[in-house]
Image (tube, rainbow, N blue to C red; front, side, top):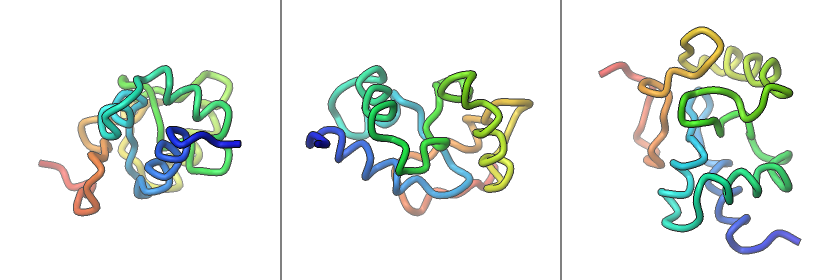
Length: 105
């Protein structure tokens, strides 16, 4: 059974637009509770049903090396801004505002 914190994490991950990402810490900060490790735990246990590839490390790398190639495919399919094999966090970070876009400042 999913606990209330996990439900909030998963709901937020489902709202991240295609081509955008949030880091584990971004999610915790947005929710105002927990931290990157708690978000990571939620994603490892219950994250398979949400767009998990949109949750990355703060440096733009995939959740773990095991999923890196799958993440790259998803990121490329969605047009996520990349810098090599990692997400360009300056361009792709979503702040939880539906008005956010991928436009370059």
